[in-house]
Image 1 (tube, rainbow, N blue to C red):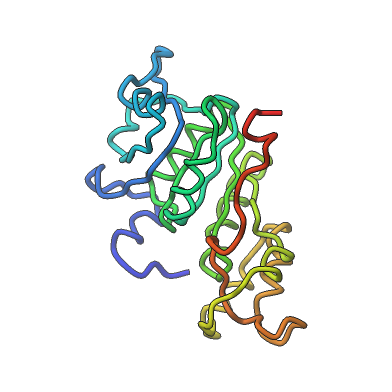
Image 2: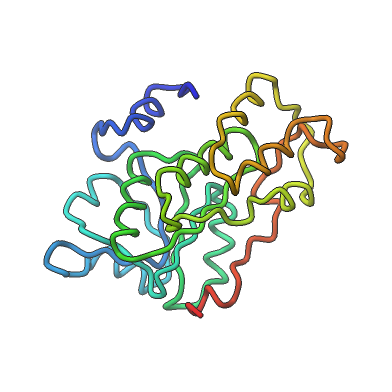
Length: 219
């Protein structure tokens, strides 16, 4: 994997630049400092049921974060994120929108949520880069605290793909996938499978991604 621009290169190697260029958007997540005090600014947005943009500099004095039921969904697509905010009841799970990259701020958010005892369900696009991002999360956090969500082989086979043809160079990324739960998905994407539209990427927004009701309540 070769990052395609300077900021992505910095993010790939965990290099912080100015503290505000890399951002993520969160919903219904509380942040706590070393004295167990709630960050009142972020808490106001959580109480108002509004998304808020987070930068690296916002997280410098934060020790951990969590949602009400310690379950957080991370999605890369802002349209999916926006729809989910309309369905999640108060005092249930939280949301992160990564905008398609695991930037330094997203990696830090994940660390803080895991420190707060959360389980993170990650959903990405069905293309080589989307699976690579998910795989990096799975292999970095191998204790089951980060779980792929709606990224199975069956999910890929059932969704409507777009007409783009994945190049051989991009398809080669699929050979690097290590997570057992994503390998079958990676094996289904190249052309020549039973599905005549294999070889085409599928996007997250094509799946029904409403979280299960038990996750809403923590049951």
